[in-house]
Image (cartoon, rainbow, N blue to C red; front, side, top):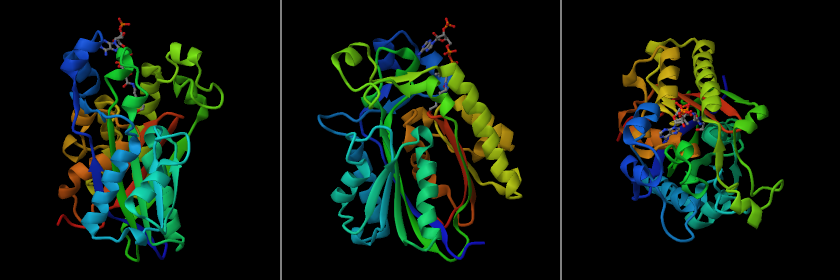
Length: 332
Ligand code: UT7
């Protein structure tokens, strides 16, 4: 048992006001509301509109909300980690931009890129700094402006993704609350099924890459679906088993919101009924690194001190994993 635990002491989220509904998508590509709802569970997503607005715009809103909620001086933050695949720029890190904007003058900050698993990777990384006794207050952000890398002529991907960001505050606790255990995995051989072809050092942006629409998400949906169902369910069941927890001990599954069918399969494998599954995919779609903190934000008022939560994700890389969290506070 560690002397210090990394407790989640606040959560906040931000989604832009503009909605993109299934009906609107019907006007853009050959699809229909019934297909999208039955195959994914998504009814609408949020889109960040406006010139020169990147992921940081949403992350800053979430972090400022977090600071306000906890009445925290930003100078007290030691570290900010931002999980994203849609940084404002290739460099500097979006976390650097957020730190500056929120006035975290004493924090160092960096980004983590683990696609849809980014938030759990960042959460576990941030928690380690606290458990080691190095830092006391860490902000972990998950957010993506997926609309910046989505091809709105490709019906197989444009129906899934949306924009949004969430953030949590991790604080040192000498009581056993917070990040209790984690299983993090990756398998780079999955890159072929889910990636963005151009814009990196292998294929820098050129007229040819733009003309070939290579700056958008490329996904082989069925292949990703199979890996996601198996791996998310497996790792979620594994983290319960190795901590001696049964379905009745788990208050909530907090699953990555990629596809309602993947979420249902994961819950089933864990033996959980739908009443214990956080779900907001219908209103936000898949916000990549944003899904898990946005779930915690939406359900915060239903969480009680001592609740066991299993956070679970699968995404590009492939990356996947599960984190066992013991919730640290009652609703205010
Ligand atoms: O978060 C990162 C990880 N990503 C995921 O976890 C996503 C995993 N994959 C999925 O969620 C699903 O594979 C999709 C939602 C992307 C697609 O659902 P699917 O049930 O796997 O559909 P499919 O790709 O097998 O396509 C079935 C049919 C095809 O038509 P044919 O060949 O049977 O005639 C597609 O062309 O559905 C067609 N289709 C569509 N039809 C209407 C594909 N997209 C659409 C669409 N509207 N938007």
